[in-house]
Image (cartoon, rainbow, N blue to C red):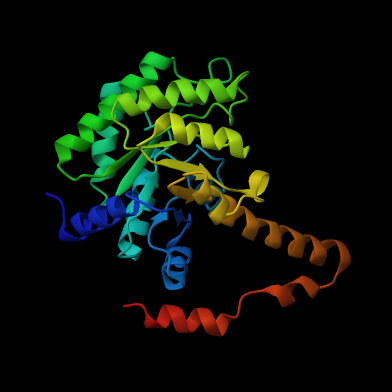
Length: 278
């Protein structure tokens, strides 16, 4: 049975997808989730890479049950809707994807994404029909849960170095929309004209765009003008923190100086924020 909290979160998340454009930032632990809520963001999303790096593992190297526990931890840390980065569903075959999606829905999420990356270098993307069948199976699992959780279909063509990523993305996102995905997502796109064409092709279903270091010049207002409904930052926030950490640590080791520590967050502010949490 779905909890009252999950029902409320799903309703809020669905409403955010109806019009306008919103930012869906990606925390990687309880503290960052609480801080993003504190800033006034309306929903959050987990980041597989951000969490993996915090555990000393590569992106994709976190086992299913550890990832489910992490997703539940983020859901329980905030009243905000949480979208789960559930990678490729931790399975190849549609029926196994469906079983894992049911487990993910059980963590209390308001949404989740399923990608088409295999993790294999010889065949980096699932064959198109199988990829669509995996989305179809995830759709059936969500529907059987009567949760209303938003299902996002992801095409990883840009990230895996596809020879013609734009046309692969257009073709596959249409197939994923027809298979039942509520929202469509192709991480790696950066050209405004390509983003606009994706939005036009997928309309009226909403499109998520990833903004990170490679396309940081894109702004909320520009993406909103292009018709994008949802913006996530993936591992961007986590990597920005890692960047600061690496530079400061190297400065200490190589130069014996501590100047970069002056740029840190104020512990008094964080203590106050976390003391206010129940």
